[in-house]
Length: 432
Ligand code: ATP
Ligand code: CA
Ligand code: CA
Image (cartoon, rainbow, N blue to C red; front, side, top):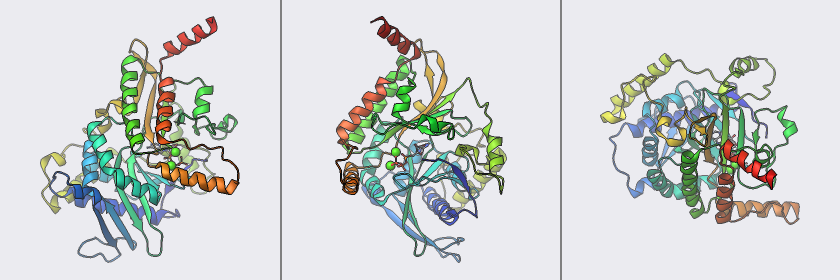
C-alpha cells in the first residue's frame, strides 16, 4: 500500500466531507462539554443525537457552509473517555477544528478506510465500516470499563464516534483516536506486527522507493529486531498487553496488530524532512515520494493556538457554567502533555528502550494495539467471500480469536528482549 499524506484544502476531493466532519465535531463536543459533568447512566452508551446543518442555520445548529446531517454517538461516554485520557476539552477542539485543515492518508487498502490527521498531528480520524461502527457501539461499555480499570491500556484510545452524511451521499462513520506517532520526531522505521507470518512481508526491495513504508512480521524477524526493554519495562509492557488481549479475545476481536514506530535517538531528526516536504507540496510541484504525514502541515504557532483555545473556552463558558476543573486558564505551553501521564507514552510521547541494567537505550518506541474493531464473524464472512471468488481452498486461515490472541502475545513477548539478552542467546546458540 502506498502511503502518502495529502493536505486536505478547498481543492481536495474530500474537502466537503472533512469540513463537515470537523464542523460536526466542533458543535457536538462543545455542546456536551458546556454542560455540568455528571455520572454515566446505561442510557448514555446507547445514546445518539442527530443534527441537520445548513447554510442558514436554525435554533439548534449554527449555519454551516454546506448542507449535511451529523450524528453523534454516546457523547457522554466519549466525554468521560477523553477525560480519562486527560485531554483538555478546549485543546481537543483547537486541534481538530482551528482552521479546517487536515492531512489525509488515503488508504484504499483492504478495508477502504480513510485516515485524516488533525493539523497538529495529535489526532486521527479514521472512517470505519458500518459493521465496525455497530460493533464499537455494542462493545462500548466493555471498552469503557476496561479503560477505567487500565488507564495505561495499549489499545487505541477512542475519543469520539460520529456519522456524517451529505444530501444523496452515503453515510460515513468515523472515530477520532490518538495518533501513536509524535509530531516532533522523525520515525525512522515503522512495523505492523500480528504474530503471523503468512503474507506478512513487505518486499525489502520496494523500500528504496518507499523508505517510510510500514514493515511487517517477516521483515522484523529478518532484521532480528527486538523491543529492547529491561526487566521493569518488559514486565509492565507484557502484563498490559496480556490484559488488553484478554479483552479482545473475550469480545471475539481479530486482526489487530501492534503498531511500532521507532525513533533512533542517534539519528535524531537529522533528516529534516519538514523542509523537503514543504517543497514537494508547492503548487505544481512534483508528486511526493514518501513524506510522513506529520511533515505536511504547518504547525500552528503557540500564540495562535493559545488564542484559539481562549476563544473556545470563552465560547464554552458563555453557553453555560462549566465547572472549574474542566476549564483551564493556562497557556498551551504551560500545559503538560497529557501523554506524559501514561506509562507507555511518558518518554517524549513514547516508551524508551532500556538496557538490562535499566539504563536508557538509544531508541524510543511509539507503540499501541490498533485496528481492533474487527469481529470474528466479519472475518469469517470476508474469508468466505474470497474463497468463493478464488474458488480454491484459501491460504488465509482465519484462526479463532482465542488462538489469534495467544499467538499475538507469544510473538510480541518473544521479541521483547534487551540487546544484552539477544546477544547472550546468540552466543549460546553458536556455542551449541
Ligand atoms: P486493514 O484492515 O487493511 O489492515 P485498515 O484500513 O483497517 O487496514 P489500520 O490497520 O487501522 O487500517 O491502519 C493502517 C495504517 O495506518 C497502520 O499500519 C499505520 O501506519 C496507520 N495507523 C493506523 N492507526 C494509527 C494510529 N493510531 N497512530 C498512527 N498510525 C496509525
Ligand atoms: Ca490492520
Ligand atoms: Ca481493519
